[in-house]
Length: 292
Image (cartoon, rainbow, N blue to C red; front, side, top):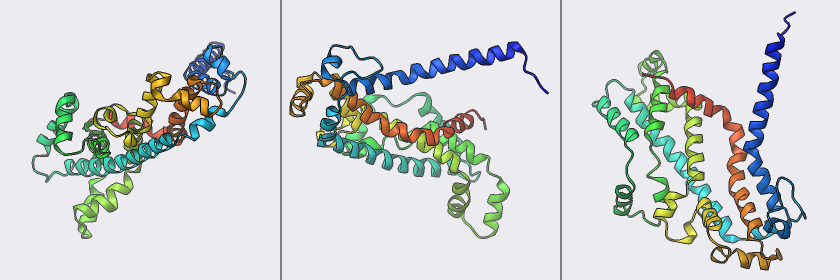
């Protein structure tokens, strides 16, 4: 029977304690926000809440769920996340597949140009002028189209496509399939891991982004959830309308509890999805480490 040496057992124990403490430091802010949102305004406003609610109450969530503009912002975020991820997968996969075909003219030059955009991203002002010239200012397309194709995603997917056996591709062509048939019936079904990786990268990035909406969106009806949250957290209670919400809901004017609840409201949806797809982050990191 293999007996683990005492030094190794000690290392495993210390390692476990260290990572347990590290995990707690990462989830502690979420626990604190939940405690503040569930606490009485008296304790929340006086900064007396740490990791456990004091004066437990749920009025703040009744107020938050009654805010129609929050649900509208949630719908906007869901729409741009789903639509943006779908377009990202279509554009990225078709471009990456084309770059792996030896007969594509100028594919090496195109690859170098894509790499150039990865090293030198487009500055804000030229990007804004392009979006404005296309008539996408104050439309949701301004939050979807500019980020639908990224150099990093293209290289990850291209690397994966290059690992697909050429014998399978040639066999499909012998059976009469064209390039699109090979792409749709062979390459995409074999690429579920990388497609899930790109979808996760893009959806998380889109869900958490607010700067694009801050620049391109003028109408409050088109504000995504993160921009709505940013305005609530950054503004004063009077400017963000939290005072009136608190009074109407009987919370005795406690914007701190509403802000904490709003942060949880915007964060929990993506946190619920993430554990089911966590393994694809590791897969994407491994794919990105490979070279042609």
